[in-house]
Length: 267
Image (cartoon, rainbow, N blue to C red; front, side, top):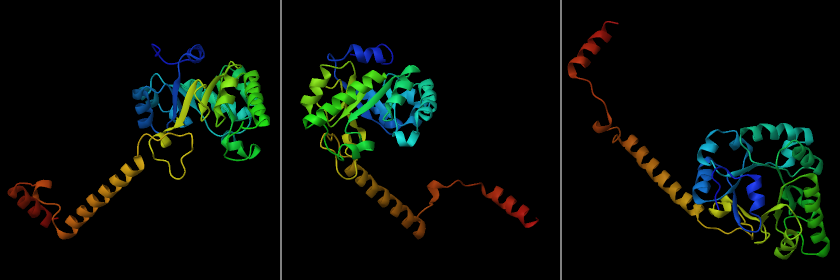
């Protein structure tokens, strides 16, 4: 399933339950371009990337969500000032982990909003830290209530993070939200991972829900060894006089050199 132009909110809503979307968090234009070429439809991006005209050159069809933690942006008025330039520059929606009031204000101003429920890392203290949310009846009810509140505030989507797959499935049957699943199971409408995890370049612990598809850490270590070896060889050539040799130099004709030296001696 591919649109003739860029993905839209209407496309995502129409495809709920019939097409499983792939989503990645990318941090560089190279990653964004690779994701587009690989067929990843949805991208979470740093806000600055949206403002870079090169982003749409490398990822013309991707549905792009710029996002940042609410405490990096501020209150509702700050969110609006943050969101409008991004939407003007080509964002398709914005992430909002702020208040329901903020979600409502963004939505009322015509900006598509993706909220965040379940394990919200920036608010993890309220649910007990970095762990699944929804394994008990009370916490499953909490996730449902969060979804309903986001829906009522005008969000079109939520990231539903580290929620048991059965709870996610039950919620998917009863909400109009587009569910972006990060560790929430296949009944989400999109499956979301971080490029750092997919490429195997995460430092430290890799989350349980993240599948690693490459080993960029080992590749980077190999490249670093080659950097050091090349730079060591260069330094040794310089110190020993092997560089620069004749093939790397430009020469002038002898008569030009003689005339120049004669001229210099008279200065």
